[in-house]
Length: 334
Ligand SMILES: NC(=O)c1ccc[n+]([C@@H]2O[C@H](COP(=O)([O-])OP(=O)(O)OC[C@H]3O[C@@H](n4cnc5c(N)ncnc54)[C@H](OP(=O)(O)O)[C@@H]3O)[C@@H](O)[C@H]2O)c1
Image (cartoon, rainbow, N blue to C red; front, side):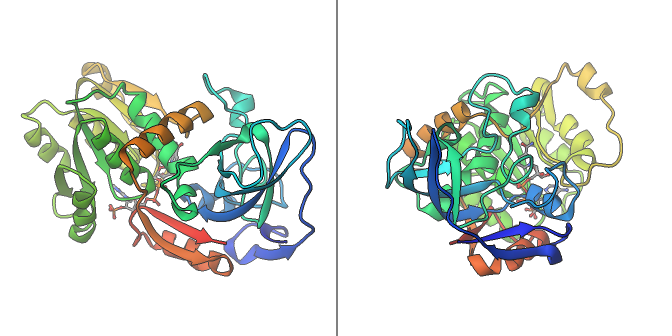
């Protein structure tokens, strides 16, 4: 079978295609033929050696979907032919995140899914919603679960308002899931063409943050001066102060991403004075994945897939994502 790995060093130039035998599933394990994988911002950092990960060699990418080919002894949950996806943290089944669970992320702490066949523990898989293709299902493990966790940790309730930033994978899922929860979504983007995509998936209010650099004031205007109930904060230090201004007194900010970089400082004073609740979000558990999948199935929500690249075009896919021209998810089909 073919797989991609970093062996001699980090950097996209060191990502090579290699060959090995198809692995055999052992006791309690499941062999999956990967049909599609999706890219996350984190994968760029892992490949560049700028994200905590296991020593090389490393097979990158956390998000893959595929078909069960063979099950090992004592496996009860899966059978050949099942359509599955791997969970991001292989050991985070439910409950709170802890250090052991956090150290089980695919394509980081352990080898990932950029391979034609992968062996998983049977507990490391979920069934994928029937209405989704493999390409669509491959977008769920990181971005969609993160968006779900970001919204539910803020106790999202029908009739509330939610602010999302940009049109990356997490934000597009946040818009779709927040709409399914019956909320009013205010969404920002750098371009009017991308805002149009946001409108088409249901965003209620649109702000071009390039044309309106003080977008936090526009959010306040749109909410009668009070601010939104929940912010899905993917920007990091560069957007933190604006998001804090845009959230209501007693509102909730889910701290998800660092698209503007991880250097710099953020001032918590506004959060104290406004009684804002802040929650760091690190993807989510299998339990969250399964709850989210039920909502996707119920509302027939389809992930926004920007482009599907071939297995041999992984480097082009990474370049496309790095350009920031994408909307939603970039996928590699096998
Ligand atoms: N904590 C977690 O568990 C977790 C999980 C997944 C991702 N993340 C993090 O969350 C962030 C988003 O991830 P992603 O996978 O959705 O990334 P992505 O798909 O690469 O998102 C890229 C998009 O973000 C938008 N963007 C860039 N700079 C922005 C800014 N200053 N303000 C608003 N939008 C901006 C742009 O959209 P527009 O051109 O439309 O503005 C850009 O196309 C990343 O930092 C990632 O590492 C965290």
